[in-house]
Amino acid sequence: MPDFTCVLDKDKIKKQISRTAEIISTDYRGRELVLVGVLKGAFLFLADLARELTLERVKIDFLQASSYGADTVSSENIVLKKDIDIDIRGKDVIVVEDIVDTGLTLSYLIAHLKTFGPSSIKVCAMIDKKERRKAAIHVDYVCCSVEKGFLVGYGLDYAEDFRNLPQIYHMKL
Image 1: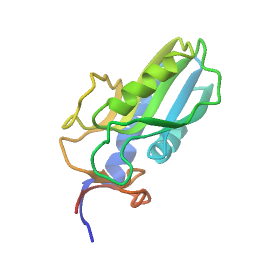
Image 2: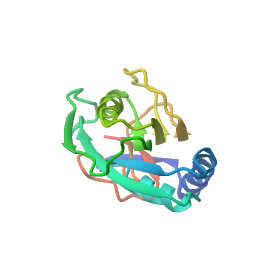
Image 3: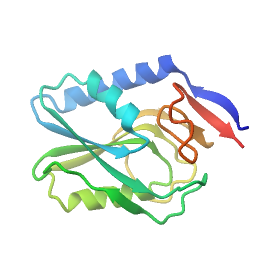
Image 4: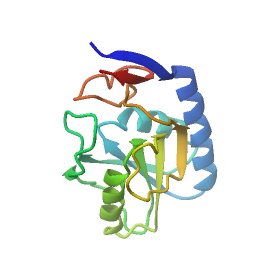
């Protein structure tokens, strides 16, 4: 059985999401915004973030990519499993991620989304973890920065387990 150490509790998660939503709402006031959540990990974060936004026009879509499988390190072999359905041509897009780790998946997804001709693409992440960063990725909106460790909970998984945990934990196997 894995050992869990709490990294971010429910209150800190909620507070950081509210703060981030306020900044995004200010930055995009009067504009239509498309949030593109990266499945499966970002779905909880995206739902909470979207509810905190004070913008009048927000569209939500999802895409799904995989690079981890059942391991704790990226295979660096990125596979697009689900593409967006909304036309983002000429739209402002924020890619919503649970965690930016190596940056390879996010870099791949941003390049993919640019082919649809959005007017802008920014990134919002629940967690920015630079320990294993391999791609030069800028995260525009960060709720929390974490130095290191393999994290689970609040959408983050290990082999599809532990997404349902209400807080974020460092997991030791």
